Image (cartoon, rainbow, N blue to C red):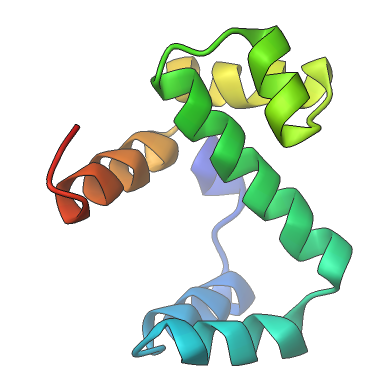
Length: 101
């Protein structure tokens, strides 16, 4: 599994910190301190691309609406199809929170 190469004490500490956040405002505050605007926008864009791929949107539509490159779209698609299941978990939970689609 590819995730094994990520594992380590420092990453565990980061994930524990994220999991300790209690609401959206705390997330805004933490990520504002933690990452640059470009880093946050890149992560946001990837999640947007994953959601649009899951909805069956075309690469062209995704590129136009998200400003993502086809390389980014392809990478996210590969992760959705062959990855560790992280996108799938999040997308399914977001659907549940929104009452399913």
